[in-house]
Image (cartoon, rainbow, N blue to C red; front, top):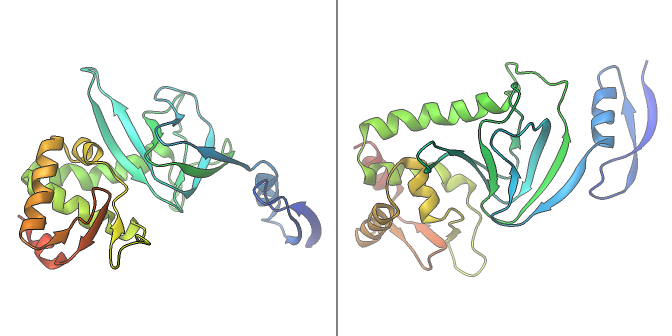
Length: 224
């Protein structure tokens, strides 16, 4: 039997609305009561490596990087999370990476203590593993320019349009982050971008914007 309950939709808008709660809706309603919206400034950590973090974090705006600090003091960027993604906790005693805001972010946090990995929902460790499974073969077989081409094509669907320049996208990921993700130096990333621009494959109106001119040629570089 369905019941009608009046509950706050979330803490984001603070507007009450009528929803129909069926047998499978009670958990959703309880989750919504616990939702908390937050603003995370650029460079701020959402949580730290080895921290006991038990919340789902849904990204509404901005970009977040998953950073693993290595024993030698270097860092490896394991993955990026985009608007619409949900960062899930690991089913372990602690997180295996630090989540940092690449840009200023708007997020929603809610309790995830009773959620488990399934065919439809991956825990935090599996989320990052899936990213690394696509990253590792590329890094093992291809040269640095091919890695940068692969990265550009991979992030292109996530990049927002630049409101000031026709056909340009906002390149939200810093050069240093690209380098730490694909396993090369920032100087190599800069040389690759300059080479792609010189060959007419991309344009870089500013340091933080990009136009894709010849994606097929970039794909050929990616394939090696």
